[in-house]
Amino acid sequence: MRKFFKVAIAFGISALRTYNYFATRLGHQEATLIGSEFFGNPKDLIPCDDLAVAVLKTSKDEEQFRKSLFNGIFCWPNQLDSIKNFYDLISKSLNSNTFGNEVFKKFESQIKTWLINFPDRIRLKRVVIIINLNPIVCFGAYLNDIIRLASCRNFDVEFDSVTSFKDLSDFNPDVIIVNSESDSGVILSFFDEESFPNVSAVKRGCVYIVKPEVVSFLDVSPDSLFLAGGIIVSALADLDSGYLTPKGSFYKLSYLQMFRHKL
Image 1 (cartoon, helix red, strand yellow):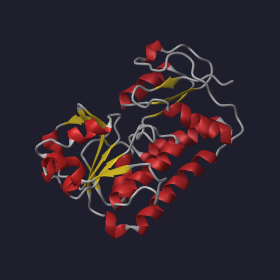
Image 2: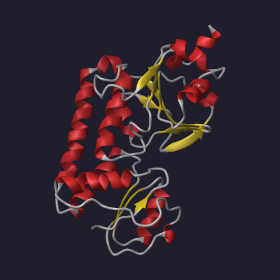
Image 3: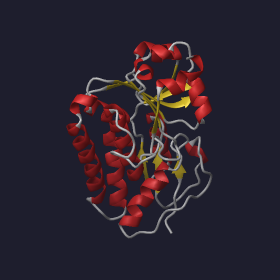
Image 4: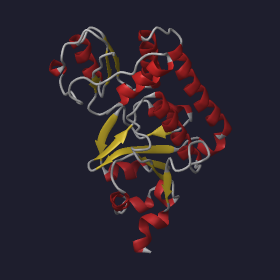
């Protein structure tokens, strides 16, 4: 059985899922995890002669791991091209020179098809993607590329960054997407902030909740990537779940739900 290191504090089992997606479809055994689930420092890794696969949080992490592991495939998914390259390298490690590229092209083609079908519903919207509520952490990374393809603008964050209610209010997003572990009560309390009722997305009821157990935007494995892309396009086009994505994959918070106690 192939040895495997999962190396990612922020990205959970993304690397393992990505590798096993390709392994099972190319007739190879699935990988297993060796060692601790999380590694904070490359020096903590156990030397391994087999392949190490990692999804990393920063470019600095990538540099460190490349120095520490000779036989490794690493992805810092700050843009779609990085994920494309990640798929390609994993596919080639499994003796296929084309499958990784084919999977990514299918994803890219699907996103473009969706966007072509809803141009007037999507363009020029301001978007905020929140992955943590306390502190407020907004997410960009590869999703910035999808949002730019839609001629929209994500909150100004390259990967992820802590921000404030004031910064979000000043940005005045048309769409807010929350992909946080917090329960519904905490999420509703979050939107009870004094400055939020005047934010465009809140007034229009364009606040979308995506539970991490359905899909995490921090997971770049192909199945998760397809679902995340469908949810982003659905939110931009103001579509309900069940149209581009499975029913129940996300839900909308209406203005009445968020401020019913003040009405």
